[in-house]
Length: 417
Image (tube, rainbow, N blue to C red; front, side):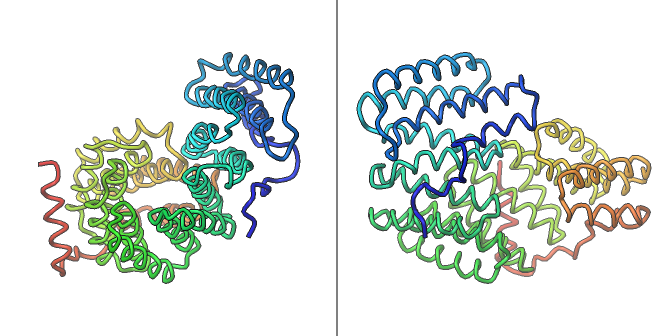
């Protein structure tokens, strides 16, 4: 396994940031920020261990030029602030001869790019840091960088190299005696198994991590393992077994965003069982607490779907209007899902003309973004709009045959009281 930073593609370093010009007008803020990122990371490269140290004059000249360009971007929002922070950190790292000062700024920028969906750019930022070598960086920064790299590669379906990155994070953590990070690296590898479709092995791996985390009293890791276990059991057709694990994850999480994510997934599993009441309680709690836009938009869409399932026209229209607010900034899969379930709901209420318009909008978005599973489901319903839409959510009768499910349903009833 290669553990150095020379996994970047050959060619001009950081050219990935210049690709924005292919997607946007040359004068747009996004393109200008991409150019700023290119200049900023080339400035960081002056301190790279694989090149001769810059002369004071060269460093000052490039510092001034990069700082001036970033100052012109000052009104362009969060990304501009990240770039300015990297420039300042580079100057301080050069002054003190301590490149470890670069880590917080580069990792923060990589996180921002990750959350914005710029996965290849985020990978470039992480590799820029790792190019300094794990023997130079603090172990915590090295672990964080390799863990981020594993996630970014997984999101890009680069599964083999994602595993390499997670394993390297675990190796560094083990050497540093950081048992929690060792377990987190195993969580990353569980995620790769899950998204590769190796569900049986993912379940076994998550159960192992959950047991080891509980034995070591690593609450956060145990929560993540329980969360993963709940979802994998659902995908294996054991939804009724997955629900208690998701509730356990919610109870273990201390981070509000993680709690909201667990509640959102919990609502989806109750819907899969055909039990709308506890699903709505979980999803309404997501809306009440708020959270990242994607989670909130998804919860609102599912609440709209639940309302149409119950034939509650007033609630359906209320959630449909609420969901419309989030459409512009939502990713393609959530936009597709909104139009898809709005179309199903309108069909259930007998408005077939408007239902067809929503379904065709869903098909347009899904086709444009190659969301093949959605395309198949939408086309199937459009082919038999008079009957299929009303049956789309007609799952089995509610399954409350176990004490564990009854306990989760009762606990959801008490949320927010």
